Length: 64
Image 1 (tube, rainbow, N blue to C red):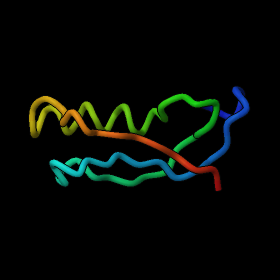
Image 2: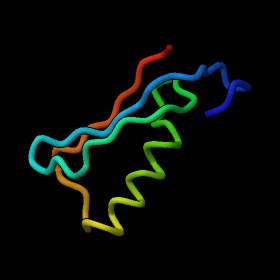
Image 3: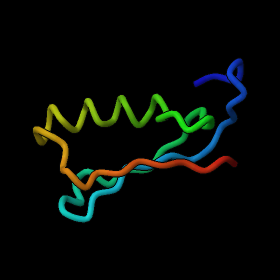
């Protein structure tokens, strides 16, 4: 997301209780209920390293 879509810079994360290797935090444009691009890219990187993502993988963000 970019500022053109009404988002703002914020923190974003991935979390898994079953496989903590997938836990990650970063910053990106966030808002609108969409997965931040940084989360999507990180999932792609982690899938190369660890295979299929855990079923309990969650993502989220907060503005600011």
